[in-house]
Length: 265
Image (cartoon, rainbow, N blue to C red; front, side):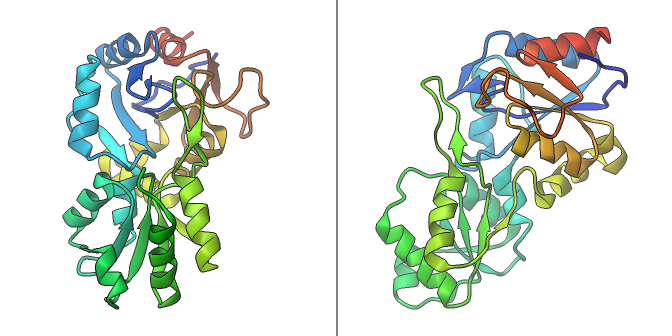
């Protein structure tokens, strides 16, 4: 590994980097503490849109990671793709509803869609109550003129037992049923990059280090930001896979990346 340029901030993916289903990956909590003690700001940049921000902060606190104000989610990025006063049908979790509420977007119920209420956008994220009726309502709203927004397009979600279907799998079903292309907010797309730039400033975002386990998401997101990418093997990518885009750093886990950043090794 190489850490030639000292990053102003370290952007950590959560699932597959810090934890798996809220179970900390060995060494990750201590790694975050070392990075902060060395003067690096650590932000958690996650495509997980299901939970409210304060719930994600609380989950990090429970494993020993203070995170108030340091969690950036794809739900918050998706909210930037709507304007205050617009109306959205949410096919996602409480985190999406919270982000839209804070943006001034009205969340329309599925029953209201059945009754013919106008919808400006259908916002899709990972949730565990997705079924045929939700799919039918979402497709109907889109056929009547709503645009399709995905919080992310990750096909899978890492757990200690292995990958499970992610928000991108649900988004693909809605996309297929409605016959439209979605606008996607989360990593590696521009809306999430704008969220990071708003938090750090454009120059600091360019000099940050993105740590992730999924090159197609985290690696390409580093390209979108114009910053460096550190790849770890603790998540969804099998050890030894050829990584594209080529990372600037490679480590077994977040602890290895933190060692390289802190020591300059």
